[in-house]
Image (cartoon, rainbow, N blue to C red):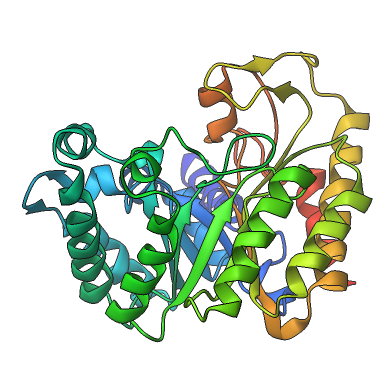
Length: 352
């Protein structure tokens, strides 16, 4: 009797480990990606299985940012990026580099030295980009060259950034030129948040992009982070994507998630309006995900569709709750790594 029960249990366990939902990448005409924190990811068998099943593009969450690469002057740490390269190569996935220059990822030692020796910062930036992009030439498909160089809200540049304070707005185009020289075939993106709905910020970006194109600054694409709320009108998203696509550049929805609650864009600035997740909310979120895919497909020509990347694809690991200090459910998988209605809404958008 015990032996019979033992053999009966084996197939049940095996079945529970299989992924029954359709593969997103197999139903998409453009790459589908997600951000990953490599160390935690490599320890989680189910997460790895889901990532391989659904995604053909890999973006590092924090592992490729400056504070991880150059912890102190002259000391470059390549080991983790090398491991990521090995993983994406083995699994035939595109690696997207996030990010080269970002004020929030700039190590304190860099800021301190730049304040005492402003002329040093540009030399450092040139050396950093040349070494980094050059080392992975032909292995990293594209880079967020500069991330969030504009003000959080409204028009203008982020003037409090050490990069802007030291080098002025020219630091952005110089970063693109250095990256292009290090790898002429890599796709180079400017990436930012709220540009899909803050028209003042969007217009500042477009003015910069159009100026770059007129002067042949080597830029390949625009990254819309697309951290959106449920109440963001589809019409404004469609308008900004269509205008951005009119440049002829690649368009990447680079950090997608859709929240129910709100925040003021600052750390700890979450506003908890919804404390519990209802069936109605889940279904509305599914519709919003489907609509987002449809807008992308409708407004961005196929040749310019660099792809859609989730900023973490499950509610267990979402950055939203940690950063804004709220409880939300922004992703297509839940905390137990099961697909939500949002998953099927996104899938339907890919299929339509």
